[in-house]
Amino acid sequence: MKVIATLNFKGGVGKTTVTWLLARYAAQKEGKKVLVIDADPQMSLTTAVTIEQESGLPDVRFDDWQKESLRDEKTILRALKDYAANPGKAVPSGFNVDSHFIYQRAGNLYLLPSVEELYWFGLEPVDAQSLRGFVPSLLHAVDEAPGLPKFEYCFVDCPPAFNALSFSVVCCADLVVIPVNADVFASKGVRIMLRGLKPRVKPLPKFCVFVNDVRPYRGNLPAFARRYLDDVAYVCQVEGDVGVQVEVLRDLFIPTRAGIRDAMIHTLPADLEKCFGDLWQRVKKTLG
Image 1 (tube, rainbow, N blue to C red):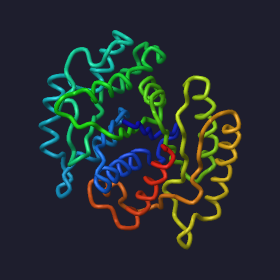
Image 2: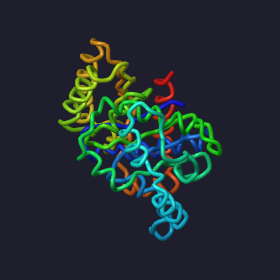
Image 3: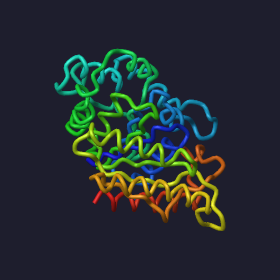
Image 4: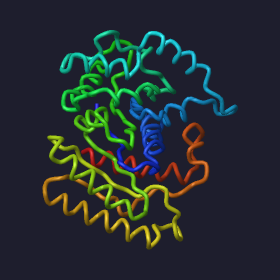
């Protein structure tokens, strides 16, 4: 399966929304079998997509499923701890990957949710290099699990605070999608990320950068946003000259839209569906 990580070291750039809506587009509009992993201990994605559309309360079906998952310790945290105890061994060691580990959200769209205790795993002394094989091993176990689909794509929502789990994700990613806001922090954040990952991750995945959450001017990217994107493009060109494969999507952006988080569980408005459809086509092209 192709692994697509959504990453930015800055919070509030819309990683969670982009991850889910891209994944949902691939599953619902193109019929792809898609797994989404919430690797962020803040659980924003898990919370947003497991509530009922009408009441806004936690979905009863997911709530019942999660109680069994937690009771049996069939969580991403348990698998991570098992792997940390025996680095390099197959994952998981204490349980089987099955429908109590991965939740079928709808049709071809499945979710491996985050858990609160993932927050505190980072406080324990962990060697990130020893955990770099965790996500590849986990996905291999998922691929071999009876009763689960053969997923074609895996989308991962990474936390802004880069940690050992994020490191493992990036180490096996085919593509890292980087949404940026149109502000002065965009180019600095991209530079820190690319320069930091280059000596630590070999081989590097491909990278794709685009502007998210910007108010259009007459349907186009406004001038101030283009200036910030030019700064990002310059950083990417410099890093590209030293072997980093990074594409800046100058002709594509996701506009600001009131209630876009609600769209994670409701039908996307037609204009936003087109935006995410265009983004998905570019992602597929970059993946090759």
